[in-house]
Length: 529
Image 1 (cartoon, rainbow, N blue to C red):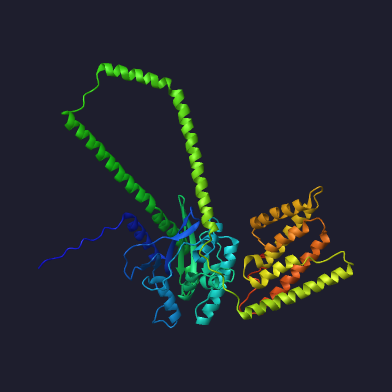
Image 2 (cartoon, helix red, strand yellow):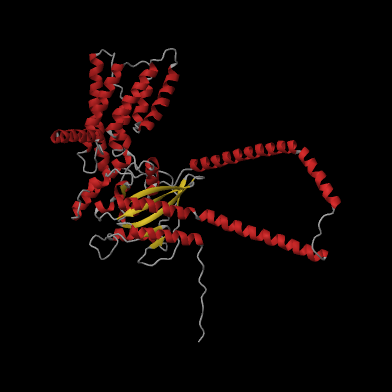
């Protein structure tokens, strides 16, 4: 009997290191799946890192970069929560043999799940999460509370667990909320994640000596959230993300080191070959140079020393040429990156409103502008045309409030503080003497818009209002009337948007919550004293 011996293909060292690092995910509580994305500086896009390795069902399966530790309950046919839509969506994410398989294509920052998590975590990665991330995690917690109540699950201390503010905390995002956000462009892979039961995700950025990226952990939304957000679990998640990112960062340098070793070995063999051929041709080893030759060598060394100044000049010239060439290459690289961005990303057109949502928007905008126009007419009549309410920026405000209700720029905090900041700067710029009006209208937004971005209260209508008020024709009374119009628009938006079951405005009242916590702490101090 003849035995057929099959030669097993030797795995690359970099693949072995990456596959061994994935074993860390066995110790993460409540983990469904894992993905690793690398940010390419040349193109400004996120590219998925293929996690190529052989694994069995117990240790997990790899599907084109998606490392599945455990299938969600919605996909398990033996579970009561399973559905055909979820099973189909899971197959679209994992089965490469299907014609409707969704490949994880490169994506830009802010687009799709990896792009959104990259944009959020890159702003607050060093501080353990910004206030914006905390607000969004609170909204995710509220969504999970409602889903857990519907399914009869345990929602004990859910919001408190999601808003735990420690340096090792992880900002979990609810994928359902992100997939249904009208402010986000439509992404088919994001929709499949939400349908397949991967409804809880957290992104952890990493930077390994310039190799940047983000590790995405898909958590179990049905697990006990206090354990999922325990400090030991979240701290290990962050360390595991950096360790796996370091393993992925080793791939390119390791390939370069292998190529360098092969080059050195080839050069050594080539030199040895030349020496052997020389010895064979001349019939013996090479002889040492004669004394006369040594004197000639010393004379040549003196000439070289005399030419040292000339060589320094040549070296400086070469350095200048090298610097110029590097500047040209850098400019070409930036132009190529700019040209790629000009062509646009892979984002799809955002979905349109349903007829019901459009009618809610019509009703809200109509009522708000009816009140604002009536107030403007009343002020104009009473002041005999001297005073009025500036309406155009308020039209932009109502667009945000009723068409992009959940967007951060639509929230009352941004609307009030950004308008106060922008109008104050505009009035000060408008009062500068001997400055042309066209220059004032250019200077005011140039100061206000980056100032809003720095303060974390971006509000597009404030940029429009500062141009109007920087002309110098408006007074501080006009500013007060305009702020009153902003408050009226906020009040009507709060009343009308919350009448709709699928809308919530605002998403949070951060100042009221802070004031409430201060009052509670003061009461506790009084009781203890």
